[in-house]
Length: 355
Image (cartoon, rainbow, N blue to C red):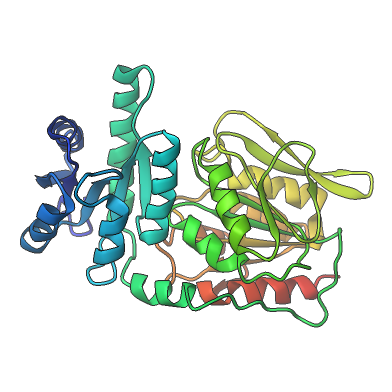
């Protein structure tokens, strides 16, 4: 339920009558959620939003009259509202989902492609959880952040920035993190020491996400593979459904990526990454915690700080969800809270002050 005990009011938007029924009934199973309406396309949805004032929208990625991305691009700057996308696991579906996250969607769920009965149950459970998270999301600054994002890259290049294989930046993020990550790493100059990132995202999306960022960044961005070297000018993103750890191999750092049980509720886990950085990199690392629900990374970031690393977290004002940064700060792992637009500069400044 929302703060104050009121049910979370949800509007379901999908061109399929059957899907609208399945989603509406699935959401209604949670006593804290009320489906206030359903719409077959964004044109009908627009009027229903005005009349019903929902807290969250679930939005189909692909619709005939106007797809979900175009709707977000037109609607979000005028009427910011938390949106959870419902995406197919096709190549086109993945591409449109990433477009939707760029256009302002808070999160997404994927429809099952195999074992539909069981997959549907899992998907609806995930949707209920993500609708609850989305209801707490801060999208009020969406237009302001979008204008800043497309104003062009600002590359902070501190004069003392050395190309060192001994220094690493470790970043963790979840809900709202795809755009926060982009905002940060597009500001890193090409000579920035190696960056390792865990963004909570399913398998199949992380490579596409990395490829998109690679087109925007001065640094090389790739989905991590076991044996990839962490080195200046390179950003490695943990693959979906695999934990990523940093290890020392002789005089260099490499990553190991492998499937495993969820840690702190996630795979990949920020805690797993940051504990490995604490163990193998220690005082030569900087940790950054970005927007996200929960507390994944709070213990790992504290371990980094105890090992001598410098850490910061995104501030509440600029977060979509002030969960992971809040936990990292209150747990003692993050030293300071920083606005999103200043995190790149602040993390590079910390990097330059490392011994």
